[in-house]
Length: 355
Image (spheres, helix red, strand yellow):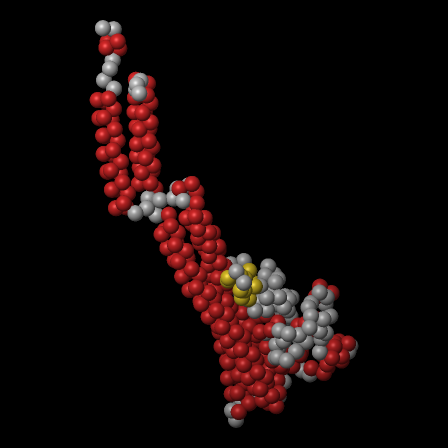
């Protein structure tokens, strides 16, 4: 069989192209440090790498949500800690004015002034916000949930965030549960307490007279529903409904009324209500703490999932450096050998054909 010069040229060209292609591929892997740069390199590995990257991106988003919810809950717990101090201070003052033999009308007037300050501080805690979102307004996070009189303008909504694909945690607690004693399972159409409704239907003069001199001298506003003001017609009716809990603002208001009226019996009665209010806030803090604990566990799980996914992706697509260096040296030697061999195989020039 006769081997033509064209066959030699084609063979040399094919061998050099193959060697150079292998060298270029190895150089590309060396530059990227990746074994799989395109799906055709390893379809199965590429599929698993894409799945791992999807899990990583999803986990990062979950971590952001968990971090935001954790900050929201921790700040809420800190605010309720301040509310606990306020109620404890009010109880301390009520205890001193109900049991101290030296307590009299003058001292109770002084203490009443401090109770008014505590009332204002409780309202400020209820209107606390993180960044541009109010903590205790339910779904209504863009408007202050409480006014200066302690009336509630929020709702009973709980903002839930996803911490896993099939798990969620509420990142807030509505103010009506904490400050007004609303039951979380109360029906949405629950009306106000009948006693409050009947009292709100009495003429205003009769209601003021029933409150006695304390309502005339006390600086804390009257109860919700006792001031008929057209601008407050949209007040949420649930703010008047006691439910199974205690209205913290009403408790402070009643204590102030008893102190202003120099009514020792009223002051003593407020002690039980202050205990109930304190227990109510402590229970809310316990619930917030359990949610924070859940978020901590979810964050640890997500972080471990991130590490596992990155490890799997690395095992699938990262290059073996020692193997790469070996292949590079071998391919480079092969390319040099091919060039040397082709140079000896094709030595003919144009002058050889002119002889």
